[in-house]
Length: 303
Image (cartoon, rainbow, N blue to C red; front, side, top):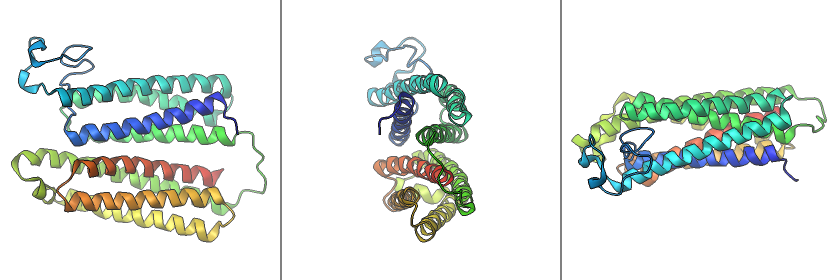
């Protein structure tokens, strides 16, 4: 099937947004969130300085770490690229689907949220990675991905014959999948709060003991992880037992189940091996992929 220009833009932009989330998780795991202590510039310049001796007045040379600086700066450059990609996708939606609100409005909403996300990134730096604003930054990124997925799926099924009457059970399945995405968003928010608490405790205690110091917040995070796992398993069983002729639904449910299995494994590695950075990146990145799989599952059920 040959894709229209909007579909190519939408798929590419969604992939870039996922890449940005993965790079953002690397920034978080490596401690590079304040690699550039100001925003939108980096140490007062649009091009990062080459050495501590090149810092403009007013910046503490002790803050200069070239590895962390470039990690954060490249994350910002990728964020700008994603912003332009979302803009291009929105323009393509206006040209090709201006009369289809199911495609146009999610794309426009993604563009508006992308602008807000850029501003929010500046607030993250200004608040020195305060957990509440890092959580907001992450949740907005995930909502942008959901909106892009919505527009993409709508464009792929637009104009196709509906075939048989729409089963009520599929509608119920779709609502159940949306409920799962809502629970997962709460779970991600709790996870970022746990990470913030870990960052605050790390200077004073060993990494092997820091997770135990988080207390009830980590307990809630683990318990809700169990709920998410059971819900995804239930959706998978439902898809495979009740919808044997709906291959896209079954395959998407299987993708969600694989993602939640990887997520649980990464969580166990984090808890058992003193929070290794690679597991942190995996945990956060796969959570975004799981949210995408659940969003796609709801849309596939409705389409």
